Length: 320
Image (tube, rainbow, N blue to C red; front, side, top):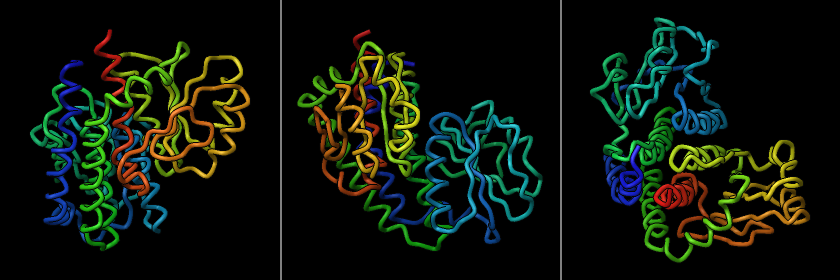
């Protein structure tokens, strides 16, 4: 992995995301590969791919679709038989656990690879391929490909529901604009936000359940790049699993706004003097509130907000 390459990958986010919006506006890439008799969907992946799939599956279940997200390394993969669509996601196309899972799927499953590298092992072994179209990530970190995984799985949801892609294409365009704003203004906010969030006991991120992947991916960016301790948590669950550390550590918390449980969280963080940064909304008790265009729309947040953590990670990585 290369810190300079990672920084360059982040700078290209708006441009590459705009191109994806154009692709989606022209037609749904899933329409040519998803069989008409799909009754159930299994999403497989590891790391960033699994984070994105977890939220995508929850979104689809909320509409009445039968969808699950599973770690490819699990020994408990669903064996649902005929009518099952499996989407195996690997940006590189070479995730060994995901490739192994392909050998353990029931023969009746229709398997599609979602990858940034069609000419790869996963592309060769799956029946069909949908491209992430995120361009090569020269830094070796899944940043654009994570963002595109979310967008493409949202497109799959639209296809399964028989919905058009015009609203999604508009959302992706808005996320490209929001990303451009964060990049263009980073000198205004990045130094202070980094100082607040990079503490001696590590960094924590929280996000609402319907965007939990943002907290997971944000923490991964600090672990994977600059190798700093970081943890992602769901905002409501925070009061059951992370609150304890506010009593004994110099607790630093970035909150991706939008959960109804932020007031409950703030009762503890305020009383114990924890450092909180609100991202994309007016988070109670925050010492800094970082806003950007479109952050009043939840799907724009989903496709944009992790860039804040990525830029923090990139700056910290470059300083090491």
